[in-house]
Image (cartoon, rainbow, N blue to C red; front, side):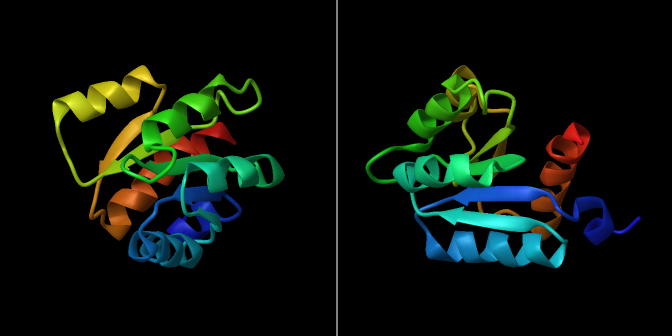
Length: 131
C-alpha cells in the first residue's frame, strides 16, 4: 500500500506562523492524499478546529498571540478533541521543550525543518492508527 493510499482522507491541521513551513507541509501532505487545514496561529486554529475536526494536528511552538504550548493545552482540554494527536513543531530540539510539550498533552515532537518522510511517518503513526 502506497503512502497516498494509506493516508488518503486523513485530515491534517498545520498551525505555524511561517508561510514556508505551512506550504511545505501542505505540499507533502496533499501529495500523499491528505486533506490539509492551515492556520497561522493558535487563535486561527481554534476558530477552524471545530468546523474541520482534524485527525492530527501539527503545532508550532513559537507563534505570536497564542503560543504552541497554550494552543495544545486548549485543544487537549476540550473533551471533543482531547484524543486528537497533537505534534509539536520546533526548530529547537531541547529536552526542556520536549518535556514542556508533554506536560501540555502533546503526543510527539517534530524538529523543523522536517523531511517529507518524517512528516508522513508521524501522520501514519498517529492518525492512521485512529481509524
